[in-house]
Length: 69
Image 1 (cartoon, helix red, strand yellow):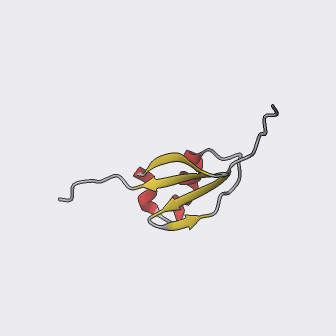
Image 2: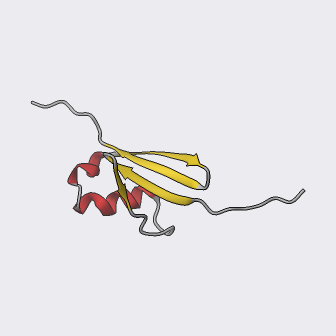
């Protein structure tokens, strides 16, 4: 029996928007930090995942719920 190794394609999602993967050299936290210039609310977001769907690894950036006031 042969073992086949496949590389996962990473997918990053924030608020329903697909964000391009800057490259495998970046950790999911580094990807989140990179996108804080575009989406400042990601500064406190959590990284959820990886959820594997076939040959795609899906990460989601989820904003932290905070109290206003």
